[in-house]
Image (tube, rainbow, N blue to C red; front, side):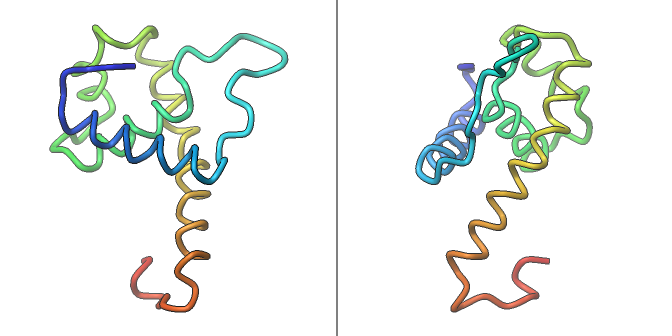
Length: 108
């Protein structure tokens, strides 16, 4: 998914680099069932975009990207909610990489 938003493009580059570098997304397309309308990395990028910008709701994110998204609002919400597991895996990876310098307060 490509958009004209520079904030989204920067976030997408960072998320994509982390995912590819550490092989976090094992299976992008499911072996059974319907294919995903929004990839997991794009869903995570949209979720991070919501929290880094001034967007308070998922509806406002959908309104910003509805011309670029190949799905409806419900699909976007489900994809963004599922992206939480990928975000957790990235957080665990960062905590493991910084194990020698970590402190509990840094990650809370």
